[in-house]
Amino acid sequence: MGTSTQEAIDLEKKYGANNYAPLPVVLERGEGVYVWDVEGKKYFDFLSAYSAVNQGHVHPRILNTMTKQASKLTLTSRAFYSDQLGKAEEMLCQLFGYERAILMNTGAEGNETAIKLARKWGYEQKGIPQNEAIIVGVEKNFHGRTTTIISASTDPVATTNFGPFMPGFEIVPYNNLEALENVLQNPNVAGLWMEPIQGEAGVYLPDNGYLKKAQALCKKYNVLFMVDEVQTGVGRTGKLLASDYEEIKPDMIILGKAISGGFYPVSAVLTSSEVMDVFQPGQHGSTYGGNPLACAVIMEALQVLQDERLTENAFRLGNIFRARMQELCKQTELLVGVRGRGLLNALIVNDTEESSTATQICYELMHNGLLAKPTHGNIIRFAPPLVINEHQLNKCLDIIEATIKKFELVVS
Ligand SMILES: *Cc1c(COP(=O)(O)O)cnc(C)c1O
Image (cartoon, rainbow, N blue to C red; front, side):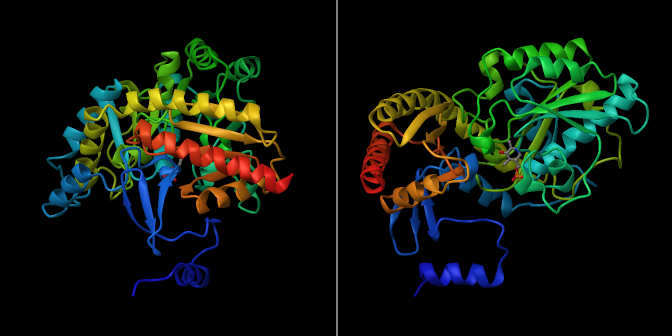
C-alpha cells in the first residue's frame, strides 16, 4: 500500500518546515502536462514547478540523458576539468548570444553570482571606491531567498525578522524611468537588476519600451544591466527570453528553473568576457556548480526546447489562453482581467491582496483536475508546461471557465 494523502501531509507537518502553504494534493507521478496524486487522480499542472518543467514532466529524452550521464560521471568539482562543462557553456553562449557562462545550482545562487560580478566589475572597471558599490533593484522584485537577496526585497513576508540586511541596494519603483535615471546618476551604481516580467509579484509587465529605455540609461551611466530570466526565460513567455520582446541585450542574464527541465537544480549567469574576467581562481565557486550531470541535463533540456519548438508553441497558445480569458472576464464580476505573455499568465480576481478568494478558486480548480497557485490573495498564475497542445489547452480553459462560473454562483 502506498501513502495516502492525509498520511503524506501529516508526515510533512510533523517533520518538515512550515515554510510553504501547499494545496492539499500529494503527487507521486508526472508525464508531460499531467501529474497524478497518490489516490490515482489525474491533474493538469498549471504551475510547472514555478516554470521549471517547461519541457513537461519526466521528459523521456532528458530522463535518458540524465540516466546515462549519472551512470558515467556525476561530480568532479571544478578542481578538475570535465568533458561536459565546456560543451554546456558553449551551447548556452551560442543559444542566448553571450560570450561567457558560469554555472551554479539554484536561481538564488545565479543572482548572487550576478551581484558579485557586478560589484567586482564596478570596483575594477568602473572605478567605484571600495565598498561603495550600489546595485539598483525595483519594487516587488523576486530574486530568491538568501539573506543578501532578500535585502533588496520590498515584501515584508520575505524580510520580517530576517535582518540585519546587506547594505548596497537601492530600490526604485518598477516601470518608472524618471526615478531610475535619478538613481543611476550616482557614479557608485554598478548594476541595475530586475525581472523583465515580475512573475512572483503577480505577472506584472512593464510598459512597452521600459526595458529598452532602462538599457539605454544603463549605457549612458556605465551601469551593468542584469536581467533575471530565471522564471521568464527558456521559452516560457513565447520568446526564448522575455527580454526579446523589446529586443534588448542585457549585460548579464540569469537563468535557472527550466534550463534543466525540472530534473536537476542548475542556474547560470551569461555575460561578456569583459565582465566574466573579473573572476579569477579562488574568488567564486560552488562544489556542484557546473557538474557533468548538470551539464548533460541542461544541454538535452535546451535541445528538446528547440526540437519541439516549445517557444513557438507557448507564443501561439498564450494568445489563445488570453483571448478566452478576456471573454470570460467580460462575463463575470469575479474577474478583473488577464495579463501575461506566452504561457506565463495571471488572472486577476476582483478582491483584495489580503483576501483568500484566489486560494479558494484554486481549491475548486484542484477538485476539477487543474493545479494552479495564487501569487497573492487576488492573483492566480497559470503556467502549464510548454508541451501542452491546443486540444489540452481548450480542455483546461473549459475547466477554468466552469470553475469560475460555478464559484460566482456560490459566492453571490
Ligand atoms: C524562482 C526564482 C528565483 C529563485 O530561484 P531558486 O532556484 O528558487 O533559488 C530567482 N528569480 C526569479 C525571477 C525566480 O522566479
